[in-house]
Image (cartoon, rainbow, N blue to C red; front, side, top):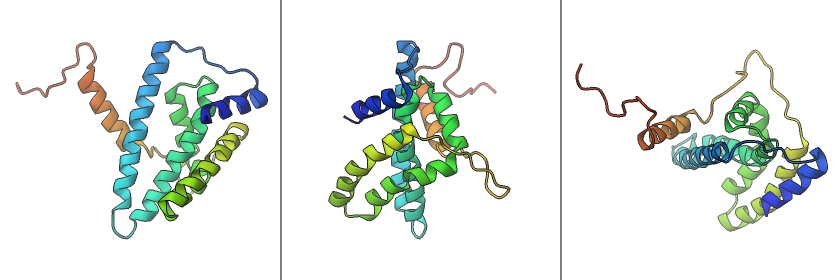
Length: 178
């Protein structure tokens, strides 16, 4: 039902949905996105068990995951490719960190049952805000302009996808003839 809410708000705010990509391109982007978010969730869990700074690292990383989920509805309806969505997200990383923080806080620092109940109320509001908002890019001499926070997960994705479906002429096995 989140998708239905997103479509209603998007039509109200922006007009008609834009989706002129081929089915193959949509399928490719969705599979890649699902894998990336799955690896990101696993990484977030692994961060949470690191002593001392793990809870805060997990909080930040989970915040980015939730912000990506919220904005992904908008970007998909705008017809953006996954590459464009990810690039925009990485360029606006400070904004996205703050944007996903409410969902992250309630799922990490509240008891599980209460946290997920609060999340179910907060997420649709964040999703609506994502659709009607325009993220601001942070500019500072002391903070990087762009961060590839999903880079470790991208590496895993590419490794798996190359093993499943190598490109023509690409050697998957290491070369032992040297």
